[in-house]
Length: 535
Image (cartoon, rainbow, N blue to C red; front, side, top):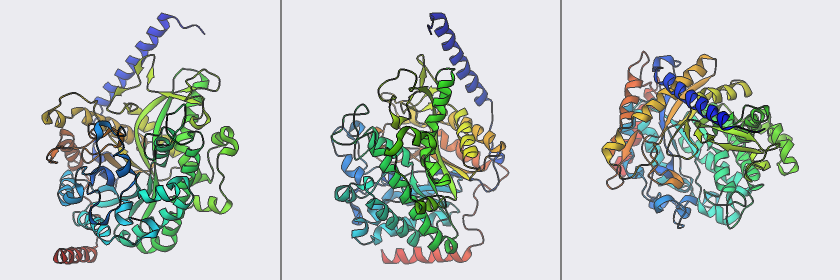
């Protein structure tokens, strides 16, 4: 079909009008905490490698990111997580700022190499356990629920060198050992566990595009020294799902009844819209959801990968045994959703696409954030993150409908501004755009909840500016600015807004994380006094 200049102009105009209308609509929609269900968790999120630092202190071993960051050219500006935000030494200060926000939950992750420096071959590191125990205890004393992720992109480098980490089924037993170590040491106080953060994103960036360690990929996705982008992601995610299921099974049978907690997994999610107003692209948008979000969640709810993946991958897609299927489908109490953006989807089965879209591993879908040069939403500091609030409502609706309205938590949602040259601290803390972002996405979340979605929490990414993986420190999602020279934490406008949002409501703004638990609190205080005396 021949497209005229007039038609292109009209498409551009319509796209701009739609984007402007949505922005005006969202700006006019005030959102209040009282619009959310009673008991809803509001929090902020971080992860161990991105904030802790203390790279080799107190028995911690090198992890995959410690090694990767020191390979020249791997990270923007040559940044590393060696010091990060020095949370390891400043965690008490950071818990104070968490408390000052008025949140009732805090999501953080546990460093595998800090707790089990050599995996199953070594002993538990008592100093690593003590560090996280102190964090948990101090959060609970302030009425803040610890919401713990066991694996957030990092593991002991030794596992990579010994057997290839996630490429090997051996990683399943290593992960189970790590998870059980966490249940044993922290489960008496942790009620919300997520096993693995974003297995689909990690698999994509580490084994398809090669941008995360171990930097595996093949053409046309990248130019790595090793890897196969068409097949390795399938095996890696398979091992991750089985690791989750085995860990959840142990939690179910040994710890859950006694400890009274819940366990889930976190999927990275995009929403997708058809690039062209044709049925082929509408089907492509559905296929993109299947090949990314449902790739993780279908096996955990239905016991197998999405039918679309079976159709296009054939025998390359691993299969589950009947025993594994049973374990998988009994492994979730809730679903964690990390959501930032929406993209356009174009069919590549019946249409001409670039070489990376014309592959089974991508579902024969080309993804883009632009239509005829016009972005789907306002740009941010990440190349494929655009501000599209309607995507939040749509992805929650998708998960609700596909997975029988299983309880959900939005475990990450956040905004990073486009990088500017020569920015001063006073500019970085005046983040009005981040406030607009969260208001708009929270309004969309309210609409999804009113439509029946069982959403039980929302965590802003992130508590403070931190090491943003390959983007280093110049990509800033934090509610608090962190000065890279002094590491001083300064609240941004968004931190003040969030605190006001959380306190100006009809709900008790800081729910007691351990209601009616004076004995537990007394035990925590006794343990902290003992620890202090032993230091």
